[in-house]
Length: 410
Image 1 (cartoon, rainbow, N blue to C red):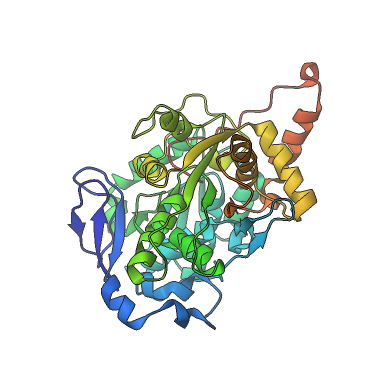
Image 2 (cartoon, one colour):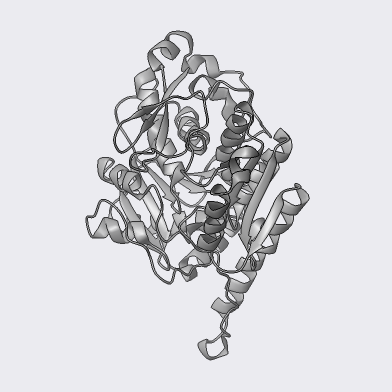
């Protein structure tokens, strides 16, 4: 039973019976809050047996609305063939090929519930495809603002889903500016538009939190020692931590928490830098560059929450080079049979580094998140491998692909 929305900065409460963005007082991210005491009396972990294997099996702790679902969630937790006690949560098996399906399923569900007609998002990747798919299923319009040099796979899927795609010269931040300009227009209110950018509405976090419920259920309601998560905007990290708090209140798990590990690209690592410097928020990363486009987020909007989670969980923040990511993607494919997105492969890099440092021991149970399927990155991986195999003198400067920006992950 959803009761209200709460600002994560000032604690102010807002009604949950209408569309909401960020806190109007301080711009804080809003979290959905439930009457967990009442839910505990009527819904238990034991009742999950036999339920539909999708994220909506946890409907008691999700907003009460008719779901817009394509079968997202309840992805496999695969035991690693290389490392004992390591599991890979393969989100690439979601609809549209990534974990974005979870957040956009929940966001579009609530948009339809509130009668919204046009949903806007600045994106250059998987969030765009997921919004396009779920908007199509819901019968609402998706308006996607993408850099003109966006990867072909993301642009084509949005087109096929019937989304309205505007190609923008410049960065993802320029796309966000287009959405901001649109929000100032008379058409925005008159035609019932809404912005579903990362952490700019409360329900993408709700969809992503189901990853935390699934990890707990798939491990017999005992959380792992650590979770390694590729962090661009960090919505999944926020969602899982929120899920752990809810499950403890429901009596499904103990008070123990996993060490939460944020992994970023060394070419764009604002959270890693802030963590190493002991800061509570990150600074804008300049000249962001990495083949892992989902990690090309110079300053996540929820950075203050991400860093707080790392601190509370006694976690860590780790960076990976593009070369390390490419090698890890190939290793997972050859050894695990998983063709991972570059962002997901970065988790293997982080785990190796943390094992070498003694942060994790062989007997520690650790979950690594592959957030997408490698098939959607063929142009990136092919170009990346080619560059990695050439002598330095033979490498040509790659064509600019300006898909970084403050709004993310994409």
